[in-house]
Picture 1 (cartoon, rainbow, N blue to C red):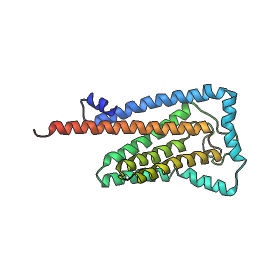
Picture 2: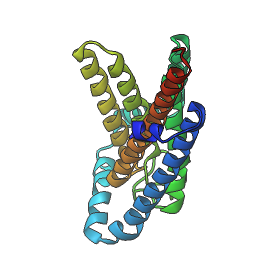
Picture 3: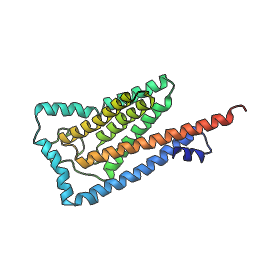
Length: 238
């Protein structure tokens, strides 16, 4: 897809990246808005689905202990401030240091898209959080779908796994980073449900949002690379 978009582009590489990112944002915004409406206005009208989605947070609530609650707080921070901003910033700094700025731009683009579209999705399809005692009661009550923590975790850890595995020459390195990424997403999703902040469908929505943000950022940065390479070849002396 990135190659076909680049082949049709007649401007500069930065403009190509900007337009591709903007178009991708609009398409993903539309998709997440439709998904939010389908979940809140259609899917959850089915009693069986709504009851099943409510059951798991209630089951976790019944098994709370002080130790597990402390663990859930630590696990939630994996996908929140300050860990996510720190990892994104560190990636950007390292990418500049090794003269691979596109890597940092890729991850920053994905996380910015996630931040904006999480808010948009929650506004389009407001949903009440699980009917259990909420351990993060300072957060808005009607922003259950999608899970912003899961979305941010997906963008950050899956994005880093994509970056590292593209460099790694040994398969075991790729296996390790992808295992960490998957576990991070699962742990954060479980912790958010344990703390009474999200339902399983919300966690799934966050995962889809995160993957969508990564896809848009990846296509945009690849379009930039293709356009830049084409321009450099055209300007090279024959």
